[in-house]
Image (cartoon, rainbow, N blue to C red; front, side):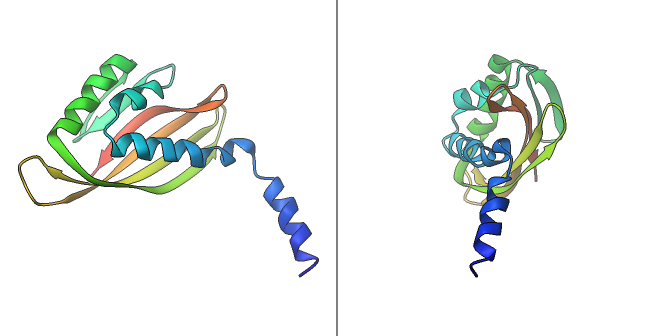
Length: 139
């Protein structure tokens, strides 16, 4: 056991800082999505904008104001029951890229039938933070 612990410490210290920061970025995304905070989501837009793939229709890349408007319509049509963090993975590249998935349980306004949707975020590393390049809803 004494020999395993130092090895574990060396391995833990070798995780890239960007990968370590993906967890807090995912938490921010989950919280913003849970609250339907379109302002917070659009503030995380990549410089190149956000592409949206909602209900099979792809648009973008959109600038933050346009993305805010499109996301607002998505949230107006549904009542959020829950949003839970799913998979998150840094996939590398230059600039660094990652993805985050959220399990989003909603109910269309005026109904009682819950629906589960996976919300996929493609992220790109800009400066010292992760920025959204794409949001995709997968039924």
